[in-house]
Image (cartoon, rainbow, N blue to C red; front, side, top):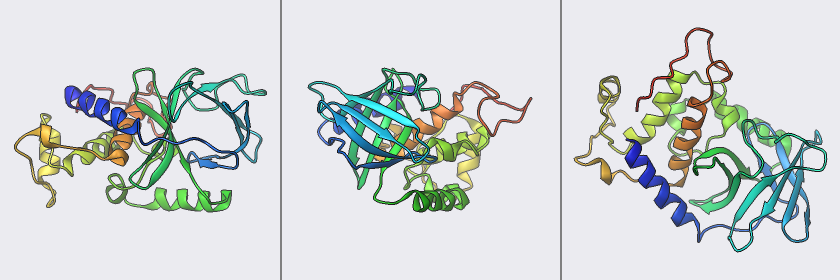
Length: 236
């Protein structure tokens, strides 16, 4: 499982290298809880964006790397405004499968936060977030780009099912007995002969990484954790 995900991630990042674009003044990005508007691009490389609550997020374009940015300190923010992220982490602007979004990546490359380019105002973004939260997760996990604030409300054991359902929809064969039994009861589950045949699109791969990142949060810090009932087992 870990080997497969590593290979998929490498191919995923390589493919996106030619499909990135540049952030522009006036662009708006929704991260699931805040709508950031790009107010200024200083010296052609420093992207300064704020929310209606005056939260600040600043990125610096990386020289010679198309669509590549990094998180840097803002003028009025001493701490990184993205939960658990650190200044210096890479931010990739992705355009693929009809989605334009920023992917904040951990040092090893996994996406841990997303910010979607949107033409909507703040009220509409909140409305869309509420619609997402009310939806059956089985109906959205493979075809809707998720965000971390959405995942905050989901218990860890369900996060594990969500992450593995993305693979199961492609027929991935699981080693864990409980997952095999769970998905074998789904009428749509059709196991493949070889897991190497499983290919994820940009939305699915990003969702897998987001969910896995939330699962890795220290026990008690994931908002949906219940004291004394946190499973941190390293399974599929």
